[in-house]
Amino acid sequence: MKLKRTIGLLLLPVAMLAVTSTAWGTLILSHSGANDPATEGWAPTVEAGATVAPVIDDMGSGFDAWEVKNSSGTGKVGYFGHAAVTPAVEADIATGGWSVRANLRVDDTTANGYDEALAPAPGFVMRLGAIGHWVLLEMSTDSSGNPTARLKGGTGLGNVSDIITTSGSGYHTYDLRTQPMTSLADLYIDGTKVISDFDINNTATFPNQFIWGNWATGSDGAGYWNSLEFETSPAAVPEPSGSAILLLGAVSLALERRRRLKS
Image (cartoon, rainbow, N blue to C red):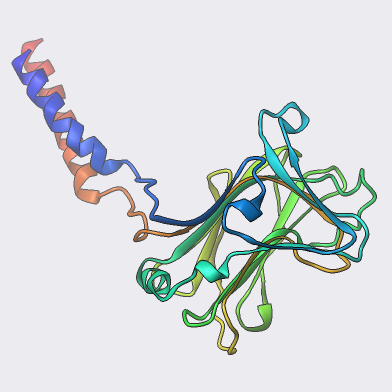
């Protein structure tokens, strides 16, 4: 019994080393539920032809959301957050990177007669002049109503990823985060990495820009935004420690040897 207790105490910290951490950094700006983003620190622009509204328990999903919709082909909606990118925030980003994570439902554009053109309708764009980052996440749906996503990045947004289709027309989490001290970004959808090492290096001179919503004139679509978080991120999450894995194996062998000696 004493040996088993000792082994258990040894295994606990080792197992903790072998588990990937999901810690996040400093929250800079966020949106939550059916709250009006204008009351959360975002600067809104809502043009004629576009609509915004709170939605409670969207389609019985249990999610409250902020509806951002453009069905006219003329107006657009944007919530601006780059004023929050202060020199201190830029310093954090320069060493630790940044992340934007959003949970939203992309409208079935086919059912509503929208154009299905991939554009920031809905979506978001991040451009950091001093850091040299520029990336756009654009979303739509396919003919079955499944949400699609694509990245554009780099100077002139000339680097274009493949289109990623996710099954199910409900809410999904999109997590775009940069690799610290690089111009590479990874996109996760519902916790699974779907785009790796995407180059967002920008050499053109532009001011900072961070906008989410339907910021594309002539591109129809709707997003129901349950949450959005812009954070400065910690260092890259390490892979499981090789030494921890070896120690786990050694402990297992010791337990097996002890069992055999007793039998």
